[in-house]
Length: 208
Image 1 (cartoon, rainbow, N blue to C red):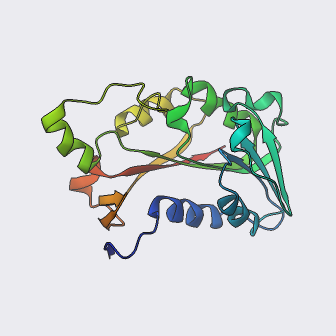
Image 2 (tube, helix red, strand yellow):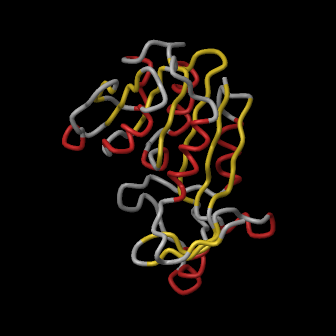
């Protein structure tokens, strides 16, 4: 367990997602990134694979592609309409699933486009993360939809969602305990079991 303080303003949720991705990717992999508005992150994924297909819903957020990156406008909920089924080795998506109106349909679309043996790596905020839980003692629970989020998840929500999906192999990993965002970064990277429910993020691994 490593403790990080204010001067180390690293988005550990993204760092962890990339580390998980790197354990499975190779130079022949075709990678799908869902939510591709940050070209630097897309380029980071592209360093380790043959091709990145970078999908973004909002045209105004779509950056210009480069190198082995191919950008597409599309809706995750209808992924198999513009991505060939059984054609993708790895999917990466950071902080997108909480925006999707029909999250079960979106998860099942991942299953359709992944090759047998393929994997998907997603992350999303925990609805009951430590800071949010403290704030809600005074304000009451946040109501959704909120801003662009259709919902946020506690772990049991995710397990229910994944259990209803076409995926039979999956795991949910808690990430970060503490303050992680805005002007303050003061947190532990890993989360001990008694504090799991207060993790900042969930990292989801799906295997076809």
